Image 1 (cartoon, one colour):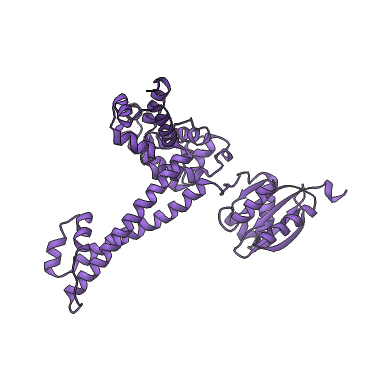
Image 2 (tube, one colour):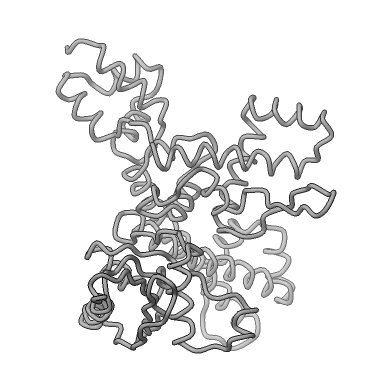
Length: 404
C-alpha cells in the first residue's frame, strides 16, 4: 500500500525553542518521530514531514494556548484539523516515564482514539485582545492591593502622630492623605515613614488610573464583540470579558451547552457506586469562568424576582443555599452559552447615532421620548455605557418615528 493511501495522525509536544512531533497510522503504530524548531520555517517543515507519511487526518497538540499557539494557528491556516491534548495523567507517566518523544506519541494516540476532541481556541480575533487586556488588568489590580496592604502595615508601627491621623481612615481616604504628604530630607523615622507612605499612595493612584483605562478598553471591546452578553442581567464588563475569554474567538467549538457548563466547572459529576446514585461537585474547569457565573448568580439573588422565587421554592424542597447556587450556576451557564454562540442582534451606539442624525432628531428629543436624560443617550451612542434594553427601545423608536 502506498503511503498516500494511509491515514495518519500527528502528535506534537510543544516547547519554547523546539517542538517534538510523532506520527501514527490508523491502528496506532508509530511511523516516526522528529524534532523541529519553534519558528515559522520549522512549522512548515513539521507539516511537510507529517504529510510525507500519508494522508494527514488530524494533529493533536499539547499546549495550544502557550508554546503551541503559533503552530496551532499555522496548521489551522493550512486547513489541518487540530485538537487540543491534555498532558498525560500521572499514572501513565509513572508507568512509562517522561520524555518529549513519549509525550508526542501520547498526543498522537489521544487524537487518533478520540480521547482528545476539543478544538483549540483560535486566538486571532478580538477575544484574544480581551484576554491580553485582562492579563494587564489583573496584574495592576494585584499590585494595587499589595500597595494598599503595605500602607496599612506601615501605619501599624508608624510614629504616634501619623498612626492616630491615619488608622481610622478607609483605604480611599488614607491613600488621598498619604499622597499629599510633603517630605523633606529623610533624617528620622517619621520622615522616612511619610516618604514611604507617599510613594506607596502615589503608586496606588497611578494603578487605579491604569485599571480605569483598561476597564474602558475592555468595555469597548466587549460591546464590539458581543453586546447581547454584556446586556444580560448581572453581567458587567469584567464578567463578560472572563466568559468571552473562556469561550475564545470560536465559541462554536463547544458542541453543546453541557460542554460549556463542564468547561466552566458548573456541571454535576457522577459519583455513583453500587446501589448508591449521587453526583458530586465539579472541581475542574476554568475557575475564573466558574467565579463569573457565581457573581451573576449573586447579583440575581439580590435583585431578580424570578431568581428569588426559584431560590424560595428550592429552599422549601430542602435544598441548602450552596446547592441552590450550584443549580442556578448551571441554569446561567445554559443562558450564557446561547448568548455566546447565537447572540441576538443588539443595536450599538454608533449605528444609533448615525440613524438619529439622519432622522434629524436631537438628543433631547430622544431622551424625552424614552423617559431618559440626554447625557445617558449620549454616553450610549458613544459606547461609554451599554444598556441593551434602552438601545433596543431607542432602535424601535427610530424605526417607527418619522423624521423631523
